[in-house]
Image 1 (tube, rainbow, N blue to C red):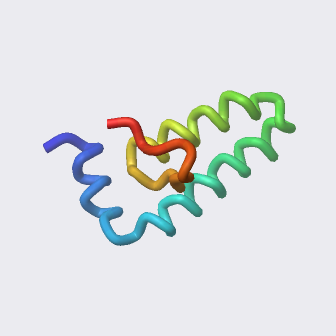
Image 2 (image 1 turned 180 degrees about the vertical axis):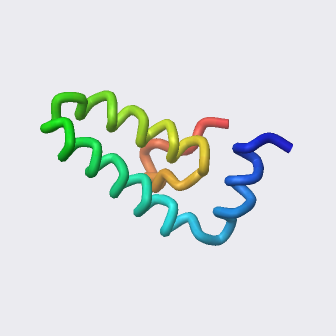
Length: 65
């Protein structure tokens, strides 16, 4: 069992809290760097949301499987 699988198992049922944590972590990095790396941080946040399955889905953009 990989490290990511263990984290996914722990987050099961707590997707909202995980999403808040991803947001807060990214916001903290943005504050500390003066938004210098904002686009890279946003990309990292999106990849984490995809990995953990916490990205909110909209009707026009269904998840890709």
